[in-house]
Image 1 (spheres, rainbow, N blue to C red):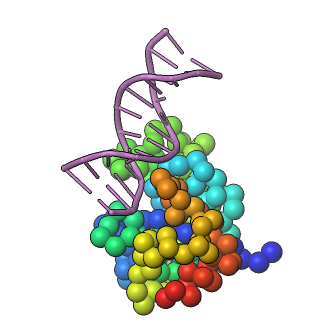
Image 2: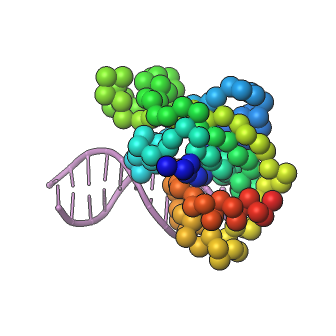
Length: 154
DNA sequence: GCCAACGTTGGC
DNA sequence: GCCAACGTTGGC
């Protein structure tokens, strides 16, 4: 089975590609995902060696900013167990976790941000969940063709 | 800051 | 199980 490709959204004020780049060799748990569809992909489908596009949302220039790779497969999201944490979920318990993370490691930052506006104009990406109106999914699969096309825009 | 789109909650 | 109310996401 060959590797798969994904896109992960993050708000750069919370965690950005620069944050990831500043911790070379230090994997980061991709925590805080609280959506079942996204959770299922994290828990069931993302594998070590898969590659991910890092996407910045809710910022001046929404778009793809970098590339990372998965270095640890799903394990429980510890932030859900912490009452003081922004992502605390009392229903998720250590003996029966509801939310999961994978660890991602920095690969590279793109030379420029490939903006959402730009991606929207590409008919080759019409099937990508990101550009569908009203889309809120924070984790989504990217096909090999979409992956190569997006990085080809760099 | 606005607001459309979407997901979740909870009364019934 | 329905669905209105509410909260969140996230582009603009």
